[in-house]
Every structure is written in structure tokens, then in C-alpha cells.
Length: 169
Image (cartoon, rainbow, N blue to C red; front, top):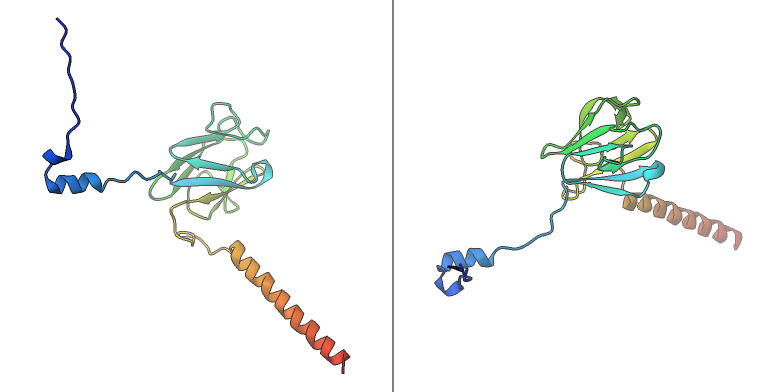
């Protein structure tokens, strides 16, 4: 004897008004990784590596972030994103790693910090973070650098105009 179970979708008319509002308020949002490594020099320049969970960086094909370079160990680092920051741990590598140009074994990286492995340099980015680095030093952004360059152009044009006015008298 075969019996079939049928699941009927609940209609909103049988749901209490408070529950109906809670159901309607549910919104699907894309999940951003807590941290991203962005290559800023070396062969990794321009590449982006999202860190959604503990990730091993190394030369081995089994690594989540694979860097095929002789200065990188098979399993070089473990990167663990947490609410406090990005926990970076050396896994017994030969050449070690640096955080903001200081050699480390185990350290917390935060938004804006620079992580170095041999000739590779990565910027730690927290996609949901505010514009300024959390707990780090303030760095010049591309827009502020353009503002400085624009200021020099304006000053140069003013000087050029003054010279032209003196010559045309």
C-alpha cells in the first residue's frame, strides 16, 4: 500500500498579521566576505582573493590561494577571518611573512594593512568597513593624490599666467 505525503504551501490568509509582516520583511542580500586580499605588487598584482573562511595560502595545488613561486612554501600561511580581524598564522614556512614590513609568526591584520609573502604584497580589505582603516594608520587614497596633483597644475598655470603678463607689458 503506497501512501503519499503532500505538503501544501501555507497561504498568507491563515497567518497572523504580525507574522505576515515578518515574512514580508525578509530580504535576501548578497553575502560579502569579511575580508579580501588584493594584490598590490609582484605576480599577484591586481588579483583579488575573497576570504570567506579559514584559507591556506601556499604553493600546493590544495591551497585556497595558490602562489606558484619558489619563495613560497607548500603551505605557507593560514588566514582566518574573524570579527576581531584577520588572523594570519605561519604554517612553518621557510621564508616567513611580514605585516606592514614587520616579520611575524602569528598576528592580527586589519583593514588597510599590508601582508607580504616573499615578493608578493597584498592589501587587506574589509568590504563592509568604513573608509578609514580600523586601528591602522591613515593612508592617502587615490582621490587625495589626484587632489594634490590638481593643486600643482593650478599653481603652475597661475605662475605661467604671471610670467606671460610680465612679458606682454
